[in-house]
Image (cartoon, rainbow, N blue to C red; front, side):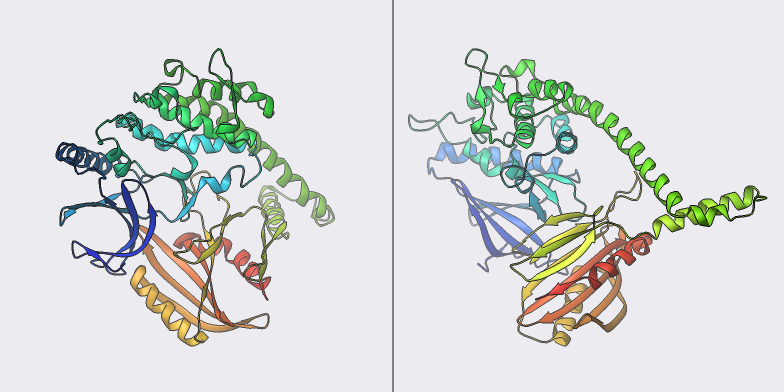
Length: 478
């Protein structure tokens, strides 16, 4: 640890070790704020000169492919391709989030059909770009599909420079086919034989969908001994349309599957569009009936001579009354850290437990409309700390200036939340091209420091600040 590559990328921590390479967490000391990144080091096991030459050729070619794919927002950017002291490295963007393993069985209960449709659509939208670039991922599995914390989007990772280096090893009697890359159970037969197709990726996505619906891992699924087709429908209730789509995605014969992610995506989108329409109608019915019933006495005393202008006023009053109704709340409780709070049911809770950022949970706001691409969120971070609130406040301000572009602290004050003294920081800044307004709540208790951060798009900050304050008011720390 502490090694600096090319005078710029300082290794912080080893994250994983494979047969052909090591993955590290690093920081870019050449950029203000020293943002984190991922460094992969490739070290071939073979010393055979021909193998090393071929490996180098494929390394160069794959690096170019990753650079091309990295132009997509949901694929990690290739930051650097380095050869130093006869060692080869790639440096990639760090994607802070969680693998969708955390969202699927066996860690979670089986997903509903609508949830599976949404997940498949999210994955296929990114994979369609990959396939349009004539690239086969070859190792699609839950571990290599991440949900990014900042915007909840799916990101495909591990396009396999190290894995492709595996493919450069010369074939011996003890080695498997050198063109084989991937993970068994998510890998179709033609890929096992070293002849992957675009539709091999479709097979993997279909298996993920079946796993999500049935709660069964791939190696727990049966196969028809005559056709090789996976037998899975008896383990779940699924509509004929979705069942037929998944069956086609995992056909034994690759020629019978969807031939690219684009064609599979079209099939899935035909299901999701009709599902969204039903949901919208249900929401309208629920919202229109409740406030009128609760406030009929108020309305009936309005003058009978009311005209068009006053009618419009009634609509606004009813909308205001509805919006002011207390929202249905859920309780979040973390026994490990001794914290408890209430949050609105329509906010999404995301357990993080990130060992790097010390974040333990996010609460993601609902979309305000169909064009809302930036979702406001509350993040709770807990870390070991031996100092006091004032020193933690100063350290946090220094961190903000280093990591947030155009940071400007607007307000700084101490308040009481329950029995706890809390420092509040209100600030603005930029994340890429997005103008943000951020509200931080800092608390030190015992040997732990708590940071609760509300991050919003500048123009939408006030939309949820009331709910944020209510969540903080409900906070209990034992």
